[in-house]
Image 1 (tube, rainbow, N blue to C red):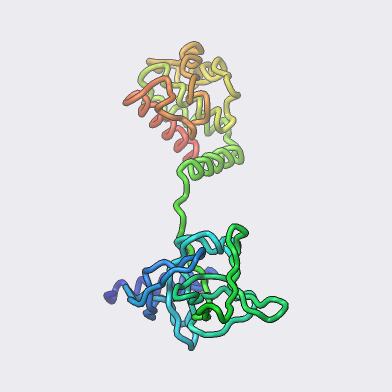
Image 2 (spheres, helix red, strand yellow; image 1 turned 90 degrees about the horizontal axis):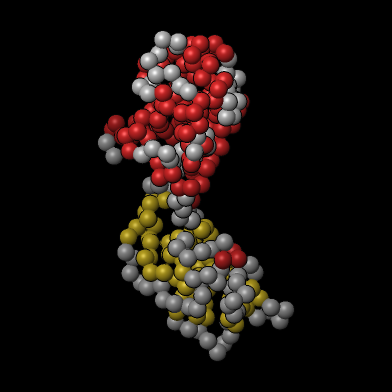
Length: 286
């Protein structure tokens, strides 16, 4: 990291602290074993450290620690899923309820440590599909460490969910805004030079419907409004033309328009979208 990057990082950390966050710099290397450790039946963890993982020094204890990957579903009840990275603190003992990395007959496994009523230790899964293992004298079973942190992979959000939330926010914003008659007049007059044919006025009408400045489906009222605002326009709208455009996805708010389900495609579709977006901007500017 060069001097400029270091200064930018410092500024970022300070800004986060001021907003109530608690950022930490990953500045300490910790061994990371790439082998996966089964959360089902035991499996080998391996002895070769494939890389070092950088973590904040404040997150480490005085005892040795390292990272491994989890595999399987037997610990899903403890919120440990396949692919999670587990931070393990090296120690030979555990208390009831601790999630441990254990050596069982030569293989490693992740389980919950628990002692039964007779004081006998067990390795217990957190999924009823799997069975518990007794740590008896008949097998080589040892506690190698305790899982002290589970690091989840950040999932990618679904496109449809993001789109839905954006549309809901846009609709809520429009619903919360009170568009005045003066704003509508200025916007219609400003958008008029961009309208080349009468049916393109539908994009303007749909935006005004979205913000409740025009009643849903009141094409006749909209046409009268346009004729009053820009009477000299070369392509004034007609009710029939607007009705013909109010089909498929164009019947919905502009945010839900979809070229694959629209009355026009290609450049003509893009022209409608541009008009609608510009009309929205003009209303906001007003």
